[in-house]
Image (cartoon, rainbow, N blue to C red; front, side, top):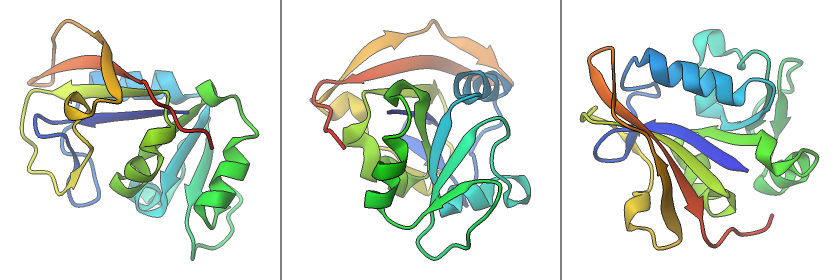
Length: 166
């Protein structure tokens, strides 16, 4: 399983249950990377999508303890049920896409974290762990800076040196 996100200079990942920045290059990368795969999220992330609808062309698995069953995504009620469900798929096809609590809960199970780093401060109210300060993660890849929609971004990949089995 992998995680995918964008983060500002302070590892902020969201504001008011939404994205902090509109970055077309990041959205394109996210879509290309996750399309045809499994995306795992919490209920607030699902609610943050337009119309509360799941992402198209992906299997959406949502940890939603009190949520109603839906035809357009797979609702799971607990982390144990989530692990049972995601074990059905190759780990490289599973992406954690948010939010803060899902990232925190599943980070140690992720082999990689794909972070689009934004050289800005987004006044975040949701944060991701600073992987540069976590000894279990190593920066494996960092792109050259790219300017897009007024922001400088870098695509990075962190490898987890101590992946926990689920």
